[in-house]
View 1 (cartoon, helix red, strand yellow):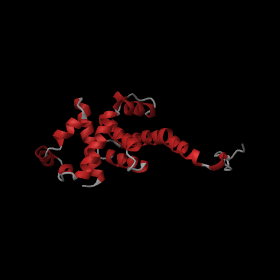
View 2 (cartoon, rainbow, N blue to C red):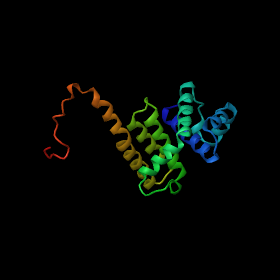
View 3 (cartoon, rainbow, N blue to C red):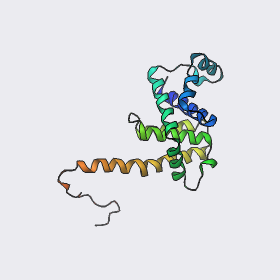
View 4 (tube, one colour):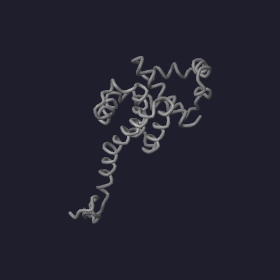
Length: 175
């Protein structure tokens, strides 16, 4: 099973748990019983291969993080979906964005660009092109505003001697 398939399963599991109002960890316990998983394979080829331990850990970790940070993630979606309330956004699109945001914020082993690209590619299988572009825009704005400033702040203290940068301002104007 590829990481992409594991990610899609995590999105579906997060979606199902959120829809039912259940803790994602409890839903995962049922979901990953071998008998139940086998019945899913009859309905959807996504479930043909049972995840190995590494994949199971990734899926459980991602769905648990989504559940634990649901309020924060929903706030971030509304913040970067300028003018859109969460209730107006497709539940599938919201589930995809929550998972990508969790990977970006809490899973250091997933590069930000990979999380966004995977989210966009998976969305193409579920959503209309306009919604896919919307997801891409929300996630891109989120990373530029929330993640990149933090990365820059972490790098700043490592500069020696406190000397000011000699690079030109971005707009080309002199300072």
